[in-house]
Amino acid sequence: MKYNSFLKPFWVVVILVASSVTLYAQNNYEAQIAAIMHRLDSIEQILAEAGIGADDATRTVQIDNGALPGVFSVSDKQKVRFSMGNLQYQASTGLWRFAKNQYSYAGKTNSKASPTYSGWIDLFVWGTSGYHDNGDKENIHYQPYSTSTEQYEQNTHNAFGYGPSTNMKSADLTGKSVEYDWGVHNAISNGGEKAGLWRTLTNQEWDYVLNKRSTEMRYCMATIADHAGVILFPDSFSMPSEVPQPHVVNFGTEYKAYTLTKEQWNSLEASGAVFLPAAGYRVGTSTNGSDNDGYYWSSTHENQDYAFRLAFGDGYVGANGTSGRFDAFAVRLVRAE
Image (cartoon, rainbow, N blue to C red; front, side):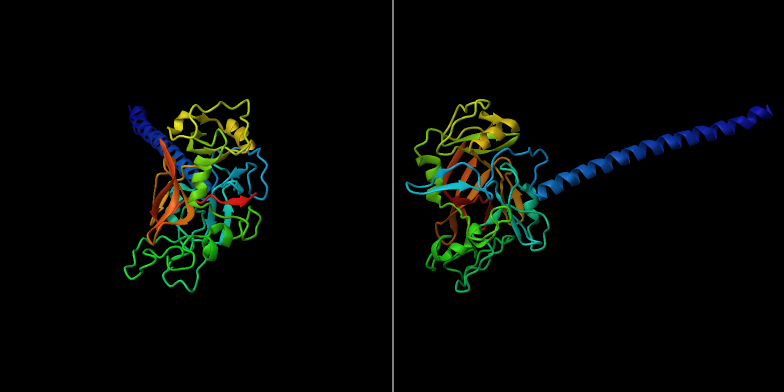
């Protein structure tokens, strides 16, 4: 009995210790899983802030100082090439670049836009190239990271303080005010590294690309590797044999109506196609619409409050609408052919 009495507390201790070890192991395992998930989230965040999608495929297209191979008419006399991706900016270094892939965009990280932000942003308020005309007293905000939505009642020619005022010689991002254009004022690190090589399309040019070129296939809504957007087909284009034909072209339809894998898109891109991702928009520091709404600025103003932009969503696309100058949209630059 003494022997048995001695063993009882011993086995209780063993059982308690074993339970504690099991509980500790379980808690430690859950903690490790949580730590791994946090690190994965951090990696995804880092990739997004770097302008690199986690599923970016190796590109096979030939890039010429940031320009894609496809040639697009933007008027009866003028042709251009589009940049290899949407424009991006890093405030902490002052660097500009094009996204490393056509369907890459920063998304929600644009809400962090500030003078010291070390990530990359790609949604910009109209005319915020970093240039300011000292003679334009109503142009208050011009930095790429600007987030103000304040309306200035005293301003009669520029209600929100963005872009050239309507009393200037040019109220568009052209002519005397061309330095307000992101591509004219800035050197793009992977786009020739020299200012003045690129520019933003006018609203008439966006409309020409979509609706007035003589080519049979001008654009279609699409989903590429789960990224929604619009494909633009160049003037001279032949569909690669390994890529299916879209059922609907030159008309707004559902993104899912034409779905391509990354490999199929690589072939299409190498043939000169351009993809504009639905990169969403920003108002102040609030971002919305990623992978659903696409807005791309033109260089054309409407009045002291609004400017023209290309806009598309699931079932529609158009280049003749306007938005408030304080809205932050994507920018896709072009270079003269």
